[in-house]
Length: 405
Image (cartoon, rainbow, N blue to C red; front, side, top):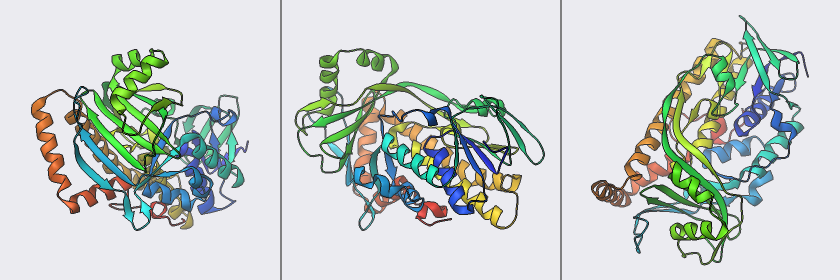
């Protein structure tokens, strides 16, 4: 463990590792990057899958990571949105999206988390990033350095401490940064299913009164399920035996892809909206879930974190190349201004969509279905939605364009 580092990143998940790689590649071997996370010493066991938007895929390509996972990545070629009650026999389609943001470039891919984390870990190690299987226990900030103490007792001085330690970030609390948000009283059940027929790259977002039921295509005849229920109902469903769980799954999935079987572990995660009141403090930055947590209704949680990565990396690299302090206030203010509006906008949008669709009001159901039908008839508006979901609107950092720093 070096006694000094240019940047220390607490958290070895998607955002933390991607930032470390981006900084190391942008600033070279003389720039010391340390990633500290006890999980780095454990086998990668994340059985979930994630939607990687086009901008995030471009970032992974620029970092030299995408080639390691592309053979296991399933393009989302189109998306269908439907709305009904659980007992309805017919589930009408109200909105469809073609799946390309440019010729030959799908707006998203589905990738299993374990494969992507393994590719990031391998690239970080190959690039000479210091990977410490330890947690940041505490830190003290001075005018030009942060004194970091690890749980194992080691001490490191760094110019910037980045907290990428998740939605329950202990470092965010130590920094005295509060959050604003609320719980939805919902949980997302996640699992992987195999099915008899080919999904043909189609994603389905089926809105039910309890919340959305998303069918997201994986390679082979498999799909990832993200299934929103009230927390009490999700607890009941997870406690069912295999036959009972299969029955509840089939009621929502339907038989459009033939016979189903659950082939992945099932789990549930509480849902809510949480945004940090500030993304920065003195020589301190929040990244990814430590800065924000939103509803998975649009599949944007991971992608928001990768937008953080691209913005912070660009601000730091640009400053360092000018001989400026890459952990100073000017860099951090640029990062916060770049990211807060986008984060708040996406958080409020997903909050509004969830409240509009996760209810049993027939009046609201009629209004939203009319609205979806109107959008279906406006190709320009549909294209805008696709580009927004792909992360390629607004002021886009270079990495999200696929450009190296």
